[in-house]
Length: 210
Image (cartoon, rainbow, N blue to C red; front, side, top):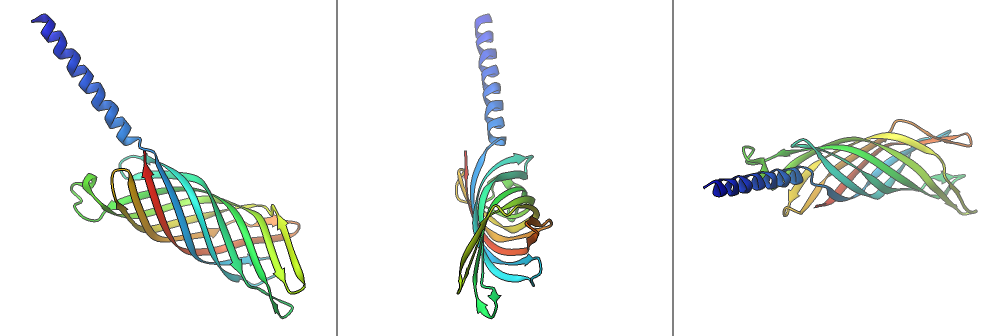
């Protein structure tokens, strides 16, 4: 009887430890996300009017949960701004290439069956964050020749996202929505100051949970 009691206690302790380990593992799921974006922006430079152009880019992010709904994401990305300014009556081509480092807080809200959010497949998502940009290369093509400049400085900005997330499986989810970005500091190099006043883009996310 004593041996049986000890055996039962050992089994119960093992099951409890396993359950706790499983629960902790579930709560600490790491998510890998690829975020692509495409949209429009306005570039403001010293001595020039705002220049409208298009942007495209992609971020590679790693996310960790902060409680049951919030998570924090960070990683590294690439952003490209393209525009066609007019210089001395001639159309030119401008391309800015940025290194993009975002930090974002995201929240998922259940759309249906709010009583059992763990069984949800569709979520309304909201994200707010900050980012750092480095203008790694600026290229200008004109009828008289081409020029380029590298490492034109760093600046910081504010970002926001709103959209929907669709859970395909326990390991895969996809997201669609709108992303906005706006620099609140200027890049300064050789007397030239510039920043992207606003970005309005459509994003597509593909997430993988470990």
